[in-house]
Image 1 (tube, rainbow, N blue to C red):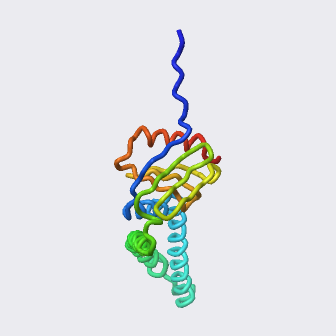
Image 2 (cartoon, one colour):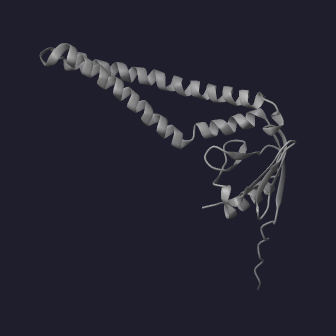
Image 3 (cartoon, helix red, strand yellow):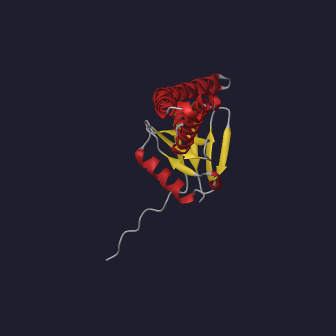
Length: 191
């Protein structure tokens, strides 16, 4: 009895996509709030709040001297105040960062020619690499440039480093074609 051989991987895959402003925003938010950057921000916030706490406690120590330094009033109270500030300011900072990322993306995409970012694109993956053809542009990337494949909600991102990607909206796409592209990217990407 012979076992059927699986279909060979396609030699080329071509996908037509229509990239919109929400797609570009979603990609930029995905990058801006990546786990690596979230960890870095967390440590930055911890360092800032700790530095402010040490400055306050040190200032109290110098102002009141060793004899009049009260650990509750001059050390614990600043710790509680800094902790309350952190609980309020950190989420506000994240929300402002999210708003700022969207604002910057809208400004960049609003510049002419918008077709560089938005509109109909043809994405073609071949044995040599992957290319994106738009109304005014043609970008080709060798497989060595592809560093990963991310899938935030509604998108398929062929990563070209940490902050650049080929954005593929999944809406309206044939899932079998996207699966073939995923398999081709995973099989050929660097590393």
